[in-house]
Image 1 (cartoon, rainbow, N blue to C red):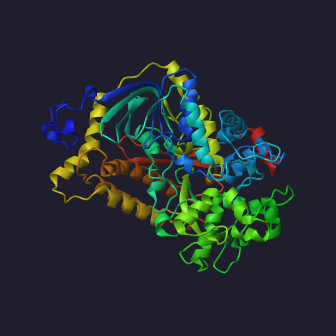
Image 2 (image 1 turned 90 degrees about the horizontal axis):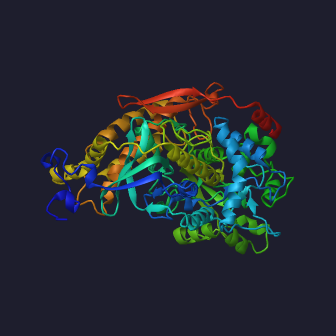
Image 3 (image 1 turned 90 degrees about the vertical axis):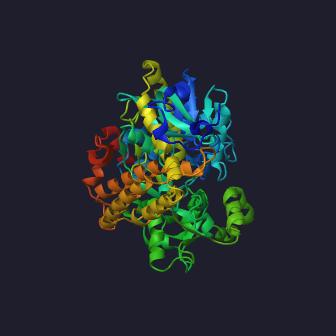
Length: 633
């Protein structure tokens, strides 16, 4: 192809000089056709792809990064499933009850039920596919304690569980005939009437647009952490799936519930926010303020008083597997621990760099050869702190603080099928709402991926078999392509004077961290809405320079739409819920509200393009599940 035309060489284009349809036609773009298209190649996406392919349909898998680099690999502590290998009192009923209580009863109870019942089979499936989990002395899969779980429940591989999950799914998936498109960004979902018929995007290496036709689409794109300044999330966590679904007409739910993990690195600044796994506390790590005091004993919620140790010795016995001991307060739910840390810092009892201390080195008092024990149980944490902070966690405490970690909200889905409110569009994993309610328990994320990844793939394949291919809307593709390339046009026309996308992204992250963070007030969130309007206007005028190949500025400009969408959804939903519950803490409404506890906050798109927020009653839980919760109390 000749390089004389700007669109042929991948450079900017002057749209006024193009033919009326010219370059922006379906025939100019490479087109792929699948029965099921899966966007995202983390645990949920891979599991969905495997299941759909097993059902005998043609499957395409699109991922934003390289295969194997999904954020799932950063999940360290374990995968929650009631196998009862370490404590035979565990079962699906206890797991269901723990999940509902941790989610403060705004969970989708059907998803919580399915998750608790099906997670053990999904773990055994992974084992059959080659997953190498840590073992008990008698050869069973080992399970460890984690926050909010009544019994040792987390299946793990040291503190590298997510990596093993991805490795296992990839190794199994390569035999299923799945076509993988790496380093692709999707800019819009394609629709025929109300139904989704594919996706349109570009490859990040060459900048070439591509059309992916599909009878069903599964979103498995992960979280929204990059909307905040301090986060554990990788660069991919820009809310792509939530935004794509919203702009395609799907509803979002529970977007106000953002989990701030209590333990992220805070020093040096270059690694601020990097996850410090909850497994450190599960293995006996304790939280101390600058005076060396274990402050978590000062604030134990009534809901957990009968399950929480009131002295250090009992908490230690719990971490060592004593069936009769109660958990240490460091293993309370993440939302509570994060707020307790913030309280210590605000009271002037924090560490030198604005956090608190997480101490696993103290177990030298309890265990012979503690240094080797810590290295064996927490190898990634040992190397992470040695290499990034020049700190030996076997000898010294870590400085940690809360970091944006996970979103409980996302695409509203059917609990059984994972289909959204748009026909043919499914979602699974972190980008889907429902399972976790107001607060996710540690380890439930990985089991969520494999339980509902499987279900999404299964029912997407079923939908594809029952429905023929829909039509692709040429005008929609033309509009999406023009919109995606507008930053190049502005770069060419402004002579380098226009603002780039990075400053807009930085200002968004800083504003969300400050005004819609771990503690919220209505006046601050209203300011955030005003700020989002101004940022959206700036985003409409950002410029990108150079050509489309390997252009991170362009990628960032495209991401801004998604980040602004999910940020507005979080902010509007947080204003709507006038109470404190789980990951949503309102300083101006610090208590739970009984009426608000019976509703989900739903976000949708009005015909005029504005964002609509409404409350919707949570469906009544069946009597048999209510009985389970009562029995577990």
